[in-house]
Amino acid sequence: MKKRRFISHGHLIDSGILTQTLNAIIADGADYEIVEFSVGKTNVQESVIEIDLICETEEQIQALSPKLVQFGSYEKKPPEALFKTAPGDKCVSEDFYSTTNHRTEVFYNKKWCQVKNQRMDAVIVLKEDGPVCVKLRDVKKEDKVLCSSDAVRVFPPARERGSEDFTFMSGDVSSERSTDFVAAKIAAELVKMKEKKEKIVVVAGPVVVHSGGSRAFSALLREGFFSGVLSGNALAVHDIESVFFGTSLGFCQKTGRPANEGHKNHMRAINKINLCGSIKNAVEQNVLTSGIMYEIVKANIPYCLAGSIRDDGPLPEAVTDMIEAQTQYAKIIEGASMVIMLSSMLHSIGTGNMIPSWVKTVCIDINPAVVTKLSDRGSSQAMGIVSDVGLFLKALAEKCVPDFK
Image 1: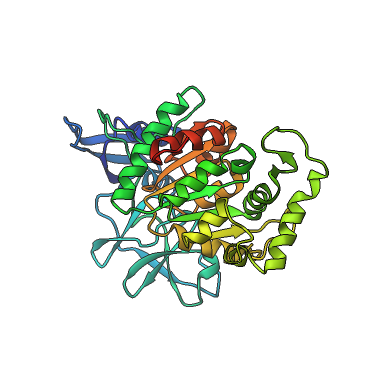
Image 2: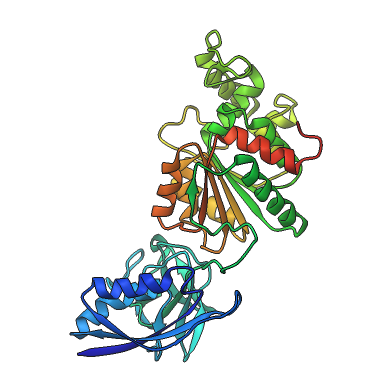
């Protein structure tokens, strides 16, 4: 029999991490022995457990160890991190370590070193100032790339028991919450974060416009609650269409009925912007005088409109190079304390893949499958709110913006 000792600490019981760890061992046909277990007795005290992983072969230990690492366990006597030279650009050794979005440390030079630029689906490269998350496409020949998880420890976020504060780390999806109640909680958090000058980024889909949420979203932008906006070409197109023609997807926003020849209004909106040269020019020339994009430009809020194969136009500001769009997204969300995702499956999941797990994440969508997919892709910290995004934004603006009705 082969043994290897692992340590895990945190809110192991309340978070379910201990159960997941032990279940993983049994599911793989291995065994364990609890050597020492100190249970935290207060809300702030962490539990600490030492477990001997018992396997029939060394190969079984090597196969099971990475699973335990992802639950936050690490070897009591870790080996020095193994860094192998990249054989070429965008190429690494096949035993490379693939990152999660959780805070990660690597045992190097006989000490635990925190990994910088944490994100999921990356590799860890040893730089002059320590280990750094790097996308595979950005690996250069001769880079030193971490291989194996033996010298890795991960810190999954865990909710503290007994906390009465509204938590965004629940990983919960529900259609049974009161929209007004949840909006009040999020509004209080937004106000508090704004006072602290923390960075809040919004990911928004065109449904914000279709559902009548433009005025509320614009008010929140105008009041300085958001430090960045991530979206696609469609949000801007239909926002501008609604300003110029009072329609969204050709439907009158006052009556909900199809407008006469309304189907071409979004193309007319694109044409008017093209005549100005850009959205920014349209604002400066007083052609575009209200709406979401107007508020973004006037407040000089960083934004990126990532193009897709479905786009009409696209607008001059749309970024059609996907690698460049990803780069701009990553730059805008860097240092964010909260990301709010408003009814956009594609852009929400894409953004969720870029942010570390300690960033507060709120996803609002009428379709619970969107939040479920976000969680399934690894963004387990996302709080899901099943609601009409237009109604939710109105409720949020009423609580955040003075005199908004």
